[in-house]
Image (cartoon, rainbow, N blue to C red; front, top):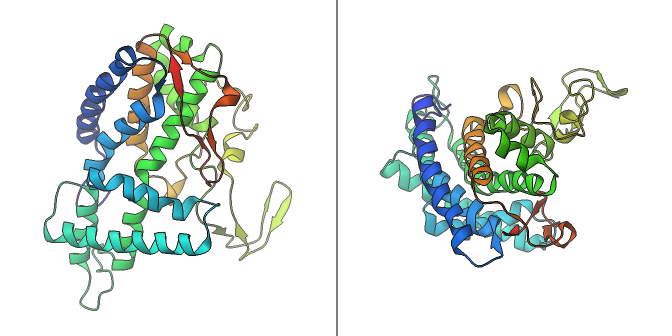
Length: 309
C-alpha cells in the first residue's frame, strides 16, 4: 500500500483480476489454435504479465523488451563487468526520464504516485515530515518496481513447471478448483522467487541462529527456501501439498520488508492456474531434462515450457 495514492485495495485487485481473466482466456485459447508445441512461457505467461503489470506500474509496453535486457545487468553472473556497468547506467537514465515524465504528466500508475512524492519533500530536498521521499529513494523504489514484470513472470513460470512435472497435481486442481487459493501459496512456498533476500541484514545484537552465533553488526544473507522448508513450521516441507492449513512462508518477505504487491501476485497466479486447470489437457512436449534453464542468472528459471495435447 502506498500512502496518499495508488493502493492494492480490494477494488483495484478486482479490476485487475477482470483484466487478467479476459486476457488469460484469449491466450489460453491459443493453445487450441496453435500447432504444437505451444510455449507456455512465451505465448502465455509473459504476455499475461505484461498486459496486467505494465499499465499498473507505468512502463510503456514498447520499452519492456529493452528494459528486460538492461535488467540482466543486475541479475546476470555471465556478463563482463563493463557490460554490467553500462546496463546499470542505462537503467538509471531511463528511470530518471520516466520519473520526470510522470511528474510532469501524472497517470494512474505506481511510478506517478512515487514521482508525486517528490513534490512533498522539504525545501532542502530532504523528505518532508508528512511522508515525502527523497529523490534517491524514489529512484530506488522505481527501479525495484520496474523489475516486478520479470520477477512475476519467473514466479509464474516456476508454478507452471511444478504443476506440469509433479504427477497428479494438475489433475488434483481440475477435480477440486476450491484448492487453487491454497495451491497458489504452496507453489510460492515450494519454489519461491527470489531464492534469497536482495540485500544483507545486519544483526543488531548477538543472536544464535541454527546453532551458529551471529554477532552484533555481522551481515546475514538469508536463504528464503531454508525458511520455507523449516520442519518445525511445515510438516513434510519437501512435499508439495495443496491441503496445508496455515502457510506462513517467507516468499514475500516479512514485517517491514513484506512485498506490497503480494495480493496482486497471488491474484495473477491464481487466475493463471485456473486457466491451466480449466483448459484442455496438456503435457510437456519434451522430457523434463530437455527443458532449457537459465543458469547464469541469480534468478533460476526455465526459459520455455513447450506443451502439447
